[in-house]
Image 1: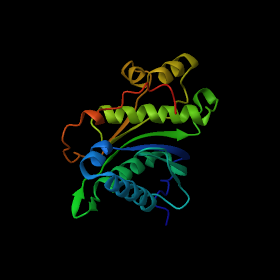
Image 2: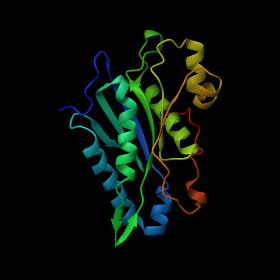
Image 3: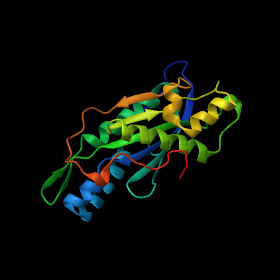
Image 4: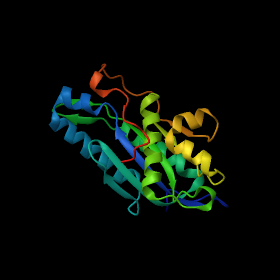
Length: 204
């Protein structure tokens, strides 16, 4: 049985999920790079179990993963985000007799995304997912931020959204979905693992 069966009348969409392992630098610094490798493998396995065989999962460099779901009911995209958050956070990684708490932050966007009926290139959609991921990191981690379909967004508003998602959200140009994965396990302060400081509108 399809775990994402659509409720009656719900349309089916594709969706991109961009994930980043929280406090990954701290894990490497405290437990060693072998532990970091074990965490990466555990997250990949959790995604494989949590998602479906038809869903595409790739490592997107460093401690990031990209998942593409070609068909999911629109009303259950948030549920997928929550399944990912809880799937990762409920399975501690055991390395050399130590439990390592792991959780992720997620940005997600429907795909294709066609504001005003004009589909955006996948790089632009991915950039929106990246900006949503940045907000998840900035606002507490172990959570997901989702960008809506944007069907009725005009060119000027779209330009503002792609330039600065957070400001566009606070200016009321769009409503973001926020999925909270629950209180993450506490981590010691680590200046090297602060919220990302990259320019969020530069893409990948």
